[in-house]
Image (cartoon, rainbow, N blue to C red; front, top):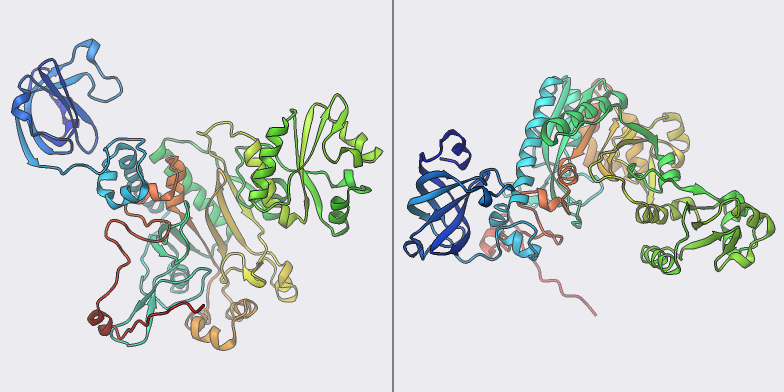
Length: 568
């Protein structure tokens, strides 16, 4: 029986075959106590014959028989469900012994993550990890509940596909039957879920495994899980309403949290101007202030140069006087992020101080002393360059009012393209519709996309867009991306062909489920909510994957590996 079944028994009633792991053995005054832990909870076991159980160790899996009794009032453990009960042991059967543990099965352990991942099956026995994995399961269940209510079909897509560029490197899989050719694992089900719309299926969702061969971070893994949806005849407004309904249902049913809908909505330009990021944490109410007008006639050389080059002076006015050490710490923080340094003034008793105070002209001084007993912190430069530093500063200097608050925000009107390493790249993916097709064709650098992100507490949960359903426009986007006619036909010809047979308007979205659960469970990393994750270097310490194949195995796939030595 399970420990939770003890609620069905009365005091002094016999407990038969209660199973679980031995946890926390204690000897006291001729008695031996240990806690028996199962999948859900624990209960104390006591025996006055400890010599009989000398070989008992932590994490032995055992079966217990004995009398259920009420504990004395002074011995009640109020922190656990059955802390008012104990079982007087009459018989114990060891079902399975345990080796010496590499770490203790308890919360808040300070054990190297590599060791925890190597023994992940033990790590998940810990209550905090077990809770994370159960929350993951319940999240999946809740998603399926709300999708069924919304009459959205659960469909699946292949995991062996053609390699297509989507922003990250593909994981490739050699084909044994077609020597020299390769499949790819999907970075997302993007084109297949669009094909469902072309196939005459109305609505689609999938809890999909996705694969990206990129560096892992605390919010990224080479293998991750996302909720994908696609809606026929959909537009951003339709999709956003569905996602809001989904988030509201999951938060209520799994995490007992009520949120209001519709969510706040701001444009990309507003987000960058007010918060310095397209992933703003709206729990922090303070926003960036533009101080540029104060310095229009300045003699401060670097600010003068910034304004001359159409840059800005932006920052924060804090209603307290920061100490020099506090300012120096903030300066070091920004320099570590790549900033040339922190600009600052202190205004105290209508007097301005700081390293730049002597260069201020009368107009600038008069503007600054309109505020008193405060500190002005700022960055000078192009908005695109200084925004990141201001976002870092904002999150550092202002506190979050409550860790148990949840602020969703939609970000839309993204630029269609962004510059990466000197090249034009779609800010979302190349199947996104432009907001204005004419503007896109004539001036793609300034065009906006029908692309929208959902952000929760400064974490980007996912992205979506209205899709291109015109094959000519799709080819034009890929061409502006820098692909040749041959590359377009080779990589995307099959998809453009599908768009050529009467494609309905459609739109969709993908939510990063791992990120969402990590935020809801206050986990340090998405690795803590994924059952068997990879390390930051992409390795699996549990089974040492990836691993080498033998020469014979490689020959079966017509693969040979040449040793590459670095040339000096």
